[in-house]
Length: 568
Image 1 (cartoon, rainbow, N blue to C red):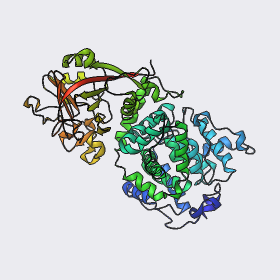
Image 2: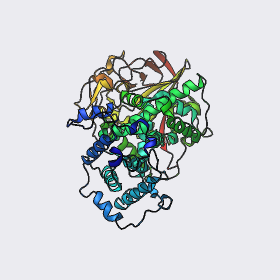
Image 3: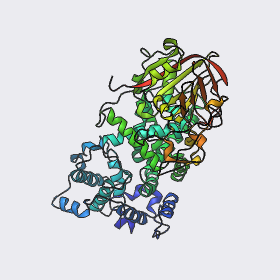
């Protein structure tokens, strides 16, 4: 029986329908694509013994370090232990960051076994400095292990994975913190309505997003978590992002139904975190495991490669700020102090709204005024002089009609010089355009909303001519200059994609007589050399409506840089 062979640590009274083994008794599949499909459909979900055997098979195929501790190592270490100590006397290592072991459906006495396994892992992996998810993974695998030694080996192989570009568990604070930033970036892009809710209700959205792994690995009921584990062991780390984003979407729906259309009031971030946790713990009453997976895999996210690039970018940003070990978090609101922030175009509250759209690695930066026409005059040359050397920048425009719009621009304006005298597009897909008045809305790279417009590419795309559809023929025939791979922000660089149309990657351009944001079948913004007149329109790159009147006069233009708040 499964209970005898793979369930000695399980309290079967808590397992519900999962205690009744039924369905297939073996898996005969070698094709990874087919195996992935079986995992998502829950092929082994109703047979505890088969699930345990599949987990063992999957984990044993993980490429690992040459010397990876196995079950025999555990038996050698623990063999001389006379009697097991109560779990209360076996504290977990500091690297779990105070996270207690989630019991799920384990027997109470199984906590002792899990604590011993984790402490033995700590002794064999001295390079682990921060791994808050380890208690949850250990607890889950213990449900499907014959003994402690087997569970130890399974956990060890997950930790020792050395497949290039693949990660299964964060093992340093740098990796964990960058994953939280990455989740924030993904939330902005793939569930903007949910992100808007978090920004509106919590004082610090970043603090809320530090719980993203906890939502999946600690707070989900066992029936849901085990289905997540099915696909996680087949598809890897990206699954956790998908599940957390799906949970955030369900939470927003739950709040919308509970409030009946009433607005949300800002509150302490801790209360929002507790509210999300309570919702997820009780999610079984409204969302089945199958519905959760369906929602998660209906999200048209980028590939593992693009997410890995973003994670590496966030890690690099943290390293540059000197954040490599755990330290007290800084509230994002501190970067936008209403007592010190001063703009003639937007209020501090409106600037916070813009800040909620920018990539997470810049969220703790302070806005630094680089250029304003009210002080520096209406000169494109002076605009370039004040903005060159800063990356990224934020462009704000107020028209004489009172409309307010702008753009987040990922790349240094000095890059325009690489095109010579030709007006050439540059920048990355992290650029976006927005309008604040008459209504607040932002428009991201069209490929984010429609991934079918591009496919991941392992080779640098060929340089192609591009064109602007503006009224002045002098800036037609634009080209995208090639830039060394090490200089571009690695995430959302057009060179990582096989774009179906060159018009979908025209982010920003400038020369001696104009600056342009967005291209392809028009421009999102066109400003003349006197920074006085401009045009707004639809463009293919951002798939945006006109941000203001199609022909407008500039009342005021500001450019803001991002000053490292950690260094100030």
